[in-house]
Length: 293
Image (cartoon, rainbow, N blue to C red):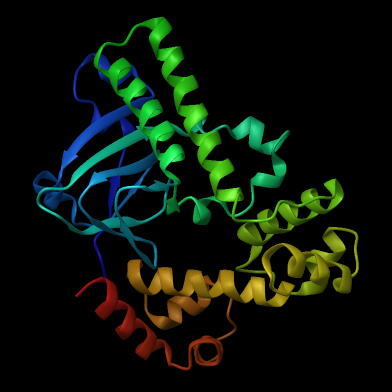
């Protein structure tokens, strides 16, 4: 099991003046990043910009390689750690409070974009023009961070939002947008419900009834927008949490089964075996070898 450290935005201030800011910009050289090789989660957003060199990053159960042109946005409470970084790598890190993450816009005007963003934005490959635009916004925020004022702090908020909206648009360039407004809201509502209820509710009929549609209609909706049936989406979310608890929680398989709503440890065993062709013990061992050892 990994020991997880909880990081707070207020602990990352580089000066007394910066403690009152809702954002931070850090210039992280590769040799200085070695001490970050531990599992952490944050109460704020963290964005890695690799200007040169290579950075290997683990976010939950995914291992990502970042180089110039790639940006990684880590959401609050996502467990992550640096696995490796070139000694001569030049990495800039943007930290900011959740209030800056365009939440109101994404919940209203841009609802269609607010689907699986925490996964999609974990690693984004930008075009040269998009990369230069992102760096321009970052450098503007960095300059304000070094010399803040009441007005300039508001300017920084706009630069961060411009960067985020550009990044979201870049991501959706490779993912088809949902065309019908009713479909948008229904699919987003389903994903939100699933993230909240997957531990105790895994019946397709429950989600269909909650959305006032037939199971057949809901299956068509999920197949259209994520390429999976409702049950496949439920199982994918559940399996992700099984892996997460095996990696990061100090729990027995019996406790994991209970926490995730399985009727017994044997039910957990059957589920993992069906999905991964491994027993829970074999899966945990392979995860530890991959991400810890």
